Image (spheres, rainbow, N blue to C red):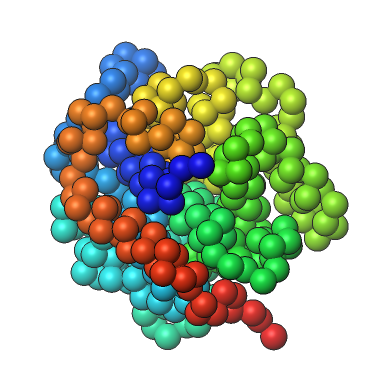
Amino acid sequence: MREMIETVKSIAYGHAVADALGVPVEFSSRQERKNDPVSDMRGYGTHPVPAGTWSDDTSMAIATLDSLAGGVDLDDMMQKFCLWKTEAAYTATNEVFDMGIATGEALFRYLKGTPALQCGCDGEYDNGNGSLMRIYPAVLYWHYADFPDRSDDALDEFIFQVSALTHSHLRSQLACGIYAHVLLHLLEGKSVTDGLRHAQAHYSQIPAYQAEIKHFRRLFDAGFAALPEDELQSSGYVVTSLEAAVWCLLNTDSYAECVLKAVNLGSDTDTVAAIAGALAGYKYGMEGIPQSWLGTLLRTELLDEICERFTASYLRSPPVRNHLNRRN
């Protein structure tokens, strides 16, 4: 079994490197990527930032990881998100250059005094990928922390609340839950398909989820991996982002191949790649991430510091702050 620090770093770096690969071509079309495919780290392009710069995807993910180093405190998590928004904390270049609409609205509400769990946007058109892109730290926390209740329902409550800080529509929460099952199954030495099957079996038996889980039917279909590329979208919509990320992982045999395939789908290149990259980072390990990409990535000392702080908190003893902020 891998050491904890190796696991945490492989996922965090897998996510951040993929994010940085996608930043320069964010919003480009698939045809543009076919004409000029990304094969290495680039600078500038869509955003005026140098090669190796990560986006809001990584900033919010490592803010989540940093918060969870002390246990679950949703206010602390939101405060760290606000530090990113207002002071450019957790950024690669000391500037915030990209922020999703729903995330921005949720943080605005929190800064105005709205309770953390009431800040998330809950409309059907608020189902962007802004909580899915930062959910892997919550999965790692669940995997390592001493939760008294290890049931799937308890996992849902935890993952759904972390999502709801910015995205509280059930569709976004379910996307995060499905992703959690996939990553947990990988962490347990099982397959992506095992994780998808488990998620399908779990969510299909809960009546309250039926109106929303239907949006993920294609992902659960036995023939999903065999879909041709032109039937996939790679937009910022949480369902298509999750589909594209999982499809890339299922149809490739290395970290580099997986994340480059995700980037070259076009559209929301950084986020789809980051979502896929966290999974591929664990699957192939740090040694599977090209050294030249790791060498180009900015502020690796910050990533190392947060990964080590998160790991150290568990090696001392599992954090015992409130696991869940239960609603009355």
